[in-house]
Length: 345
Image (cartoon, rainbow, N blue to C red):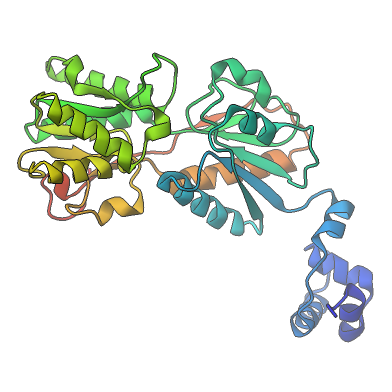
């Protein structure tokens, strides 16, 4: 049978209340007693009952992370970064996949179901600006991503437009002028990752005096931001006979698909076509050729998001105004834009 708190108390020669104080990390326990209790916990392999502990303290020390899909490399690596950041604060993370479905995203933030979480990190893709009121849930919540701005929660996002501009400027800087972009949103001007990044692409071309050719702007729904979507978009671009000497893929997975299609059609990278992606997923360093990309500061995003959620959980006065955070980005130049070793720009 599993050891109980009373078993630990008997072995350590203290009261069950003292064991509870050590488990809950209360300060007013003498160091010698604390060490004796910890030794007894280790010897008996005692595991605190988190449910009972949560009922007493009002805290479970468990937070949630709701993302569209763990099959997408970016969200899988974001989840890994959040779990590592939470572990530094002795927190457990429960990960939920919404599938990018509106109903599932609304359910993730709803208070209508039993909740064992102290707070939630939420990355929506189906909800939009008109759904800002859905975030006013009265429990600790930190928003991730680019779907809703100016809401009632802290928001950790990225420099989508300026980093996309920098990626395009990197291609311009190596002499490319016919720069295609893969991943534009076919739905219009709604604020999301795709449109914000296309805006940066356009700004870079306009600043350089390079005409924007609509034939080079290739639409791919965000639901198809994966390798197959990138490969299909690249094949269509080649089949349409549109001349181009560079590609800016709005995600690394789109870029990996584009690299595959370019190889199939005999286009040399970077000699014929330079390629840059976005997100700096691990796989981009190991493609052949390795793919240049935008590092958006994923580890910083995770760390800031966890820290802000903890602040909101611990905050007794919840009147603090919500804040927005954008970690720094960097361009990682690799073989697909003519760099033999990864260079940070």
